[in-house]
Length: 600
Image (cartoon, rainbow, N blue to C red; front, side, top):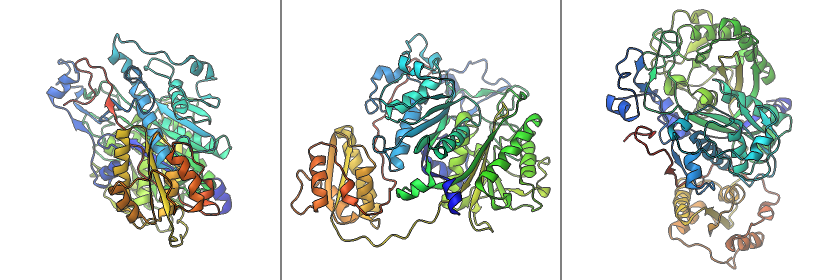
C-alpha cells in the first residue's frame, strides 16, 4: 500500500454484535464456517405463546419461521446508570446498541473515558414497536436538551456530557444516537441514519468520510433492527418479496425471497495512520467507500435487488468505491452481495456488478451473502455483511452459502467475473492481497459499496524484556469484579506467550478505572495468572516496584485516577483485545402474557 493510499484508508479496530443464533461475533463465525442458517421454525405452541392470532396459524400466507434475536430484553441497567423503570421503558434497540457500543470501544483498546480525541457516533435503527408492547404503561419523554440539539434529521453538534435519554419507540429516532453518545461521554459528531436496508453501511460510509475530513478521531458505526413481538412468524402475500419457504436462498434457482431477521452490530473505525501509530489491533482496512442515489422512486417492500430505475446508481457506487480505493475490479476476489434470494433481484444485482467490474476476465471473484445464514437484518444488514467479510479476511476462508444447490438461470454466471461460494474454501487469491467488496441496496434507490482489504502485516516485536509489570483491573460492582478477575486469569493462562507489557499497557490505558479495583505485580503472564489465582492482590505499592510505576500504582490503589504516561515513555506498545467489562444483565420487559421475547 502506498503512503497516499494509507492516508485515505480507515482501520477497523473493533467489532461486536448480536445476531440470530449468535450472541457475539465469534459465534457468528461458527455459523458461517459450518454453513448453517439461524432460522427457527416455530411450533404452534410457541406461536400462540408469542401472541399469534390462532386464525392466522395455518393460513396459506402465514410462514411460522423467523430469525429472531435471543435475549433482546437483557440489560445491565445499574452499570449504565439506569433505574429499573428507565430500563423497562427504554426501547430495547437503544439498550442493545448502548451495550454493544461500550463493548466495541473496550474491545478496540480505547474504552469510554480513555480516548482523548472526539469520537463520532453513526447509527441506524428502525422502530421496534416496543411501545405497543408496553400498552398503557407510561413512556418516559426524551430529554428536552436532546430534542433542541437536533439540527435536522441527520446530525447534531458535539455532545459533551453524560446523560440518560429514555426512548420509547414513539420518539424521534435521533434521540437514540444522542443518548448513546451522552451515556458514553463521546464528544464527536452524532449521526442517525434513516430506516432502510443499507442504513448501517451508510453509517459506515459517513463515519469514514467524517474521519477523513478530521471531524472525529474515532467513530462507532452500526445499526440495530428488532421486530416485535418475536416468534410470531410473518405474513407472505403475493409480491411481498418475502420467502414463502421460510429460508433465504441467495442466487439459487429455488430462491423465493428474503426472510427478515433481528440483530445489531457495531464497528470501531479510525484513520489507518492513527491506528498504526497507536498500536491498535487492526482487523481490516477500508480502502474506499461510495454512496449513490437516484431521484426516481423504487419499490416499497424489502430491498431484494436493484430495481431497473436504480441500476445506474448501483453501478456508479461500485465504480466510485473502487476508484476511491485506487484499485481495479480485478484486484477484488470476493463480493459480499446484497443477495436477498429474490428470483428477480439477485440476477439484477449480478448484472449490475458485472457491468461495474467491466472486465473480460471470467469466474475469478466469489459471491456470497450473509442473508442465507441470518436473514435480512434490515438496518443492521449492511454492517453485518461487513463484519462477515472482516471475519473471512481474518480466517482466510470464504464461507459457503447455505441452501445453494444450483444457480438461478437468470444469473448469467458463465459470462460474468463471478462464481458462487457454494462451499467453504481457502481464500488464496492470485493477486496475493485479499480484497473484497461489500454491497448494500435500498428500496429508496440508495446504494452503498465498501472496499475492504486484509490488515497490514503486524510489525516485528522484540522479545519481551525481563521486568516487573503492574496488571490492574476494576469493575462497577464487587460481583462484577469477581467475574472480571476470573476472565483475566483465563486470558493470562491462554495467552502466556503474549508480551506482558502489552497486556499491562492495555489494562492501564484502555479501560476506565471503576471503584472496585485489583492489581498484581509480575514479570510474565504465567506469573501474573498464578498471582491472580492465589488472590495475591497488592494493597500498597511494594518496595521493589520500578520507579516509573510508583506514583501511578499508589494512585490506583487509593482509588484515584493514575497517570500512566511515564511508564511507557519512548516505547511502542500494542493495544490488545482483552476481556471487556462483565455485564450483570437482567430481563427488562413487559410482564403481560404473550410479550416475552424468549419463550421457555
